[in-house]
Image 1 (cartoon, rainbow, N blue to C red):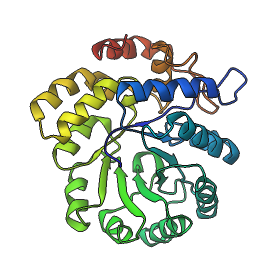
Image 2: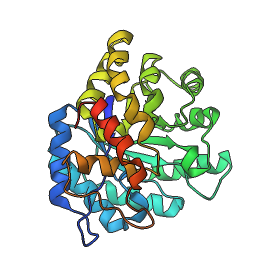
Image 3: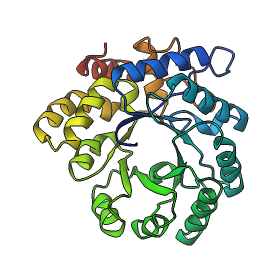
Image 4: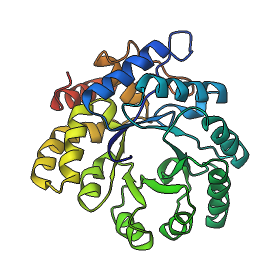
Length: 292
């Protein structure tokens, strides 16, 4: 069910700061038409930390409805509070999501045994497929391969989004887990190589801006066609490099607005609009990917 190019979808806001569901529907349709293989709703790129729980659940619910079964929807269900993550998981159970993506608890810096207890508690709150999410650059918490191996034995924990950018993690996790445990890159810069070395796909920020190219690149990489995947990835490289010049999703929201995929790039504080010093850099990157 889960493979290939999966977008970590931005959440559009209107000028009053509320979620813009009309623009959200437009985005979902855009991705389906461009060949995106799956959608993560309200992850890091979807500004999960500034949405209320009610908003969070409603956005996921609406994305499922807009997609209408055409691609699988994965709802973000992470929190740095285990009790909150469990509550969110329970509320997402009835939304129709195909899976959930649970980030490691941020700020708390739990030990590995705390991470095991956290993810076991979240998984016990649902029968829906759970994907672990390791992004220590944001959370200051690293889910180690040995801990992933322990958690992979939990029935409904089916995979991991590994966003360290360290390709050696892929081989370590593969060696420790069963063959059916899914491995997704959360790092666009190394995503192609991740798939060529046996990964199952990329949960991508770049996909927001260049979904057709990302879909094509992932398809070639998963087929083992390094030459064709590399040709496409070269066109995407400037985006991979520049979409993190400021904190995600500041740059990507600006780009999606410039493409007219959404009407504005509004963010919620403490995130603010992209600094003008990066406008030319990102414009050049979008032109390299033929999206402007």
